[in-house]
Each structure stands twice: as C-alpha cells, then as structure tokens.
Image 1 (tube, rainbow, N blue to C red):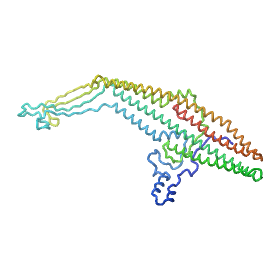
Image 2 (tube, rainbow, N blue to C red):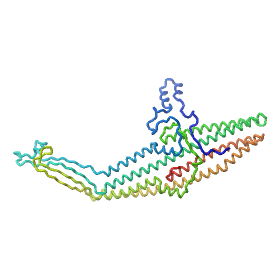
Image 3 (tube, one colour):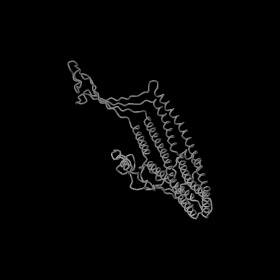
Image 4 (tube, rainbow, N blue to C red):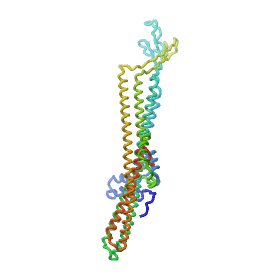
Length: 474
C-alpha cells in the first residue's frame, strides 16, 4: 500500500445523492386521487430561489462552493443565525447606554386660576372688578418649566454599568462563536475521515478483486476450491456495502456544515483540507492554561460582569444622596392667551428629593447590590476553574488521540500491510492459506479505517483543545 496523499478533498461525490428522489411521482403512481401528491412533490423538490425558506442567511448558489476550515469559520461568524441574534442583542444593549446617560426630560406647565363662578374659561377677564368682587379676583396665571437632575455621578455611573454589561454580552457571544466553531471543526474533520475511509474501502475492493482473480485461476487449474472464490466475492460485496454507509454519513455531515454556516442544507459543498498540515504543533499545557486565564472570552465576560456588579454597589450607595429639581415660572395677572396689561414677574424654585422613611429602600438596595457582587465573584472563580479543567481534560484527550494515531500509523498498519503482501504472495504461488490471506486483508482494511478515524479524532481533539483555551484552531 502506497503512502496516503497529504491533501484530502471532500465533495458530495455521487450525483445520485445530489438531489432527493422524486417521492411525489412515486406517490402519484400509487394513488392518482390523493391530494397529498402535489404536497409531497413540493416538499421534496430540488431547492430553487423561489422555494428557499426565508430563515437562511444566504440564497441558493448556482454551483458547488469550495472551502477550507478557515473559510468555514468566517462563514460561521458572518452568517450563523444564532451569532447574528447575539450581535443584534449586543447592539441593542449598547443603544441603552446613551439613553441612560441622557438628561431627564423637562416638564412644561401652564396654570391659570381665580376664575369666577360660571366662567371656567374666563381667560383675560378673571381679574376684572365686578359687583360681587369690587377689587377683582387675584389670578396667578403662569407658565412654568421644570427640569429634574440626579445627584452628580449617578447617571454616568449607571451608563457605565450598562456599557460594561453590553461588553460582557459581546464576550459571551464570542464564547458561543468558539463553541459553534468546535462543532463545525468536528463535522469538518469527520467529513475528511469519511472521505479517507471511502478511499480505503475502494482500495480494499481492488485488493479483493485481485484475490478473486487468483482464486478463480487456481480453481481453473484444480488447485483451489470454488468456495474460496465465493468467499472473496462475499468479502468484496461487504466492502462495497460499507461504502454506501460512508457516503450517507458524508452527505449528512455536509448538510450539517451547511446549516451551521448559514447556507441551505442541500447546497453543494466541497471541503479542502490538508490533514498532515493540520497536525501542527500544539502549545504545552501550561501555555494553554495561561492563555485561557488571560484571554478566554468566557472569562472576559465573567470579569466584566463582576466589574459591573462592583459598580452596582457604588451606584446603590449613591441612592442615599438627594436628587434635585429646578422650576422656573413666569406669572401675569391676565390670562396666558390675552394681551397683558398688568405686571409680569418671575419665580425660581429649587426642590430636593430626599430619601426618607429611615432609608429602607436604600439600605436594602445596597444589600442587594453587595450580594450580586458576591455572586458575581463566586461565579467568576467557578468559571475560571471550569475553563482550566476543560483545558486539562481536552489536553489529556489530545495526548491519548496522538499516541493512538502514532501507534496505528507506525506499527499496526505497516505490520498488517506486510502480512497481507506475504499472504498474497504465498497464495499466488500455489500455496495454501486462503483464509489467512482473507483475514490479513480484512485486518489491513480495518486498521486503515481505524487510522483514518484516529487521525480525524486527533484533529477533532486538537480543535476542541484550542477552543477550550479560547483560540481558533488554525
């Protein structure tokens, strides 16, 4: 067996899998009168621009798209609906900051008073003398403007808390992006593994064809039983049946990748990947732990939440400080909508909004803020411990996968390949041992498939390890 090429390309392959079967036509042949025929044809028809659901971020393309892992991560970041929702939530939270920091709305008041009986709207005549009121009725018609103010520092601190919470939401969305990326990497390397296993099975079919030909030739020369040819044929059919299962798994993986990156699940997708190049050096455990503790988005989010909780305590303590209200008024003895013929004067008022009732609300507000801070501190410590533990666990899984891959690649597969070649040579030279040859071929196939799976598992654990530390796996 030759050396496996370093570059692996994954594509849909079989054109029979590119479009779903015409189930509607089958139903129509069975029952001409059923109204479900048109509905089935609609559901299982090939995807076009007209019937593309609106939930997908990108429209149906005209041909297959070729992408590597980095491009898929970029597509995930831009088009994944869950990440788009988190981005909009972050922008919505940022929009609350200027609202909180803006001054309170002013209040405009219009007052007229002193109107005599039967003249509720006697604007401009309320101060006229009458027989009942020879001196007139004193009226203080006025226009006032009131502007409330919070104690200096309250609004800016509340806006700072809202901004910190928004940044914590952004960091949390980055953590979600890494988690979805880890899922995407797993599907990506699983698809590469399926393609590699398909190549192994195709080569196994070729080897079994050689064994069939040798068995057939020996049977023609009365040197072997016909059952040996039949057994080789059965083994070849089994290998071909395994190809069908792998093709189905590959198709499902491509559908899942399309869905993750915001494409329609039935879009044609070609994956580019260099497996050997992807197996690059991994930093040490200490380096990964240090990076995770300083740069992991989840820890950034919890640290920002803790910062917001501490500021919340300061804001709660400011509730003991009074707020203000300034009122400016203009008074005239005539109505506000008539010509003035009397004296016009002004009034200025300053109000204090004092926290009374033994500071009950303020005291419990401070206690609530302090307990929120304690909860945020405990959550930050727990989150840090979980991140470090996840890095350790992922690193152990990576080391185990690397050792298993090296053992299969350097020892078991070469040994199985040598056993198969020896068995084929002996059997071809009119020696006995057909069952040994068939067993050696089966073991070689199984070990080559196991190696493809081990390499895929190694790359998956490597991607999970990087994501656990807060890094993209490329």
